[in-house]
Amino acid sequence: MKVQKDTLDIEIERWDDPGDYPNAVASGPLPSYDYIGEVTGEVVIELEDGDDLVPSGSYNSLEEINYDVFEYLSENEPSQVNILSWDVDCEGNKLTITVGEFEPDGDYEAPEPDYD
Image (cartoon, rainbow, N blue to C red; front, side, top):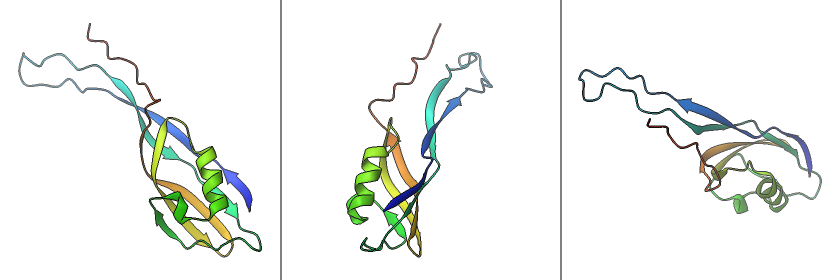
């Protein structure tokens, strides 16, 4: 197995309250906050002779993929997220792997809102 490309990264996005409310009770905007918007990039792996062929599809468990690929992805997945599913596209002996679904990890700490 040869890893040809690994560009997985998290993108932090910012939510800002529009503050456009029709009454005086809710006239002030809520505090803005940062959150993990998506995991971008891909991992491209070339399988070699003797490696198990992996069919294209969506995988909720890395164990459903090839063991060496599983080991690489589990050791190199982006920090601050838990990957819930992987999307795998297989063309010949080349796998293109992207993140299907994810959730923020317990390690991610968004800044506390400033209510003052």
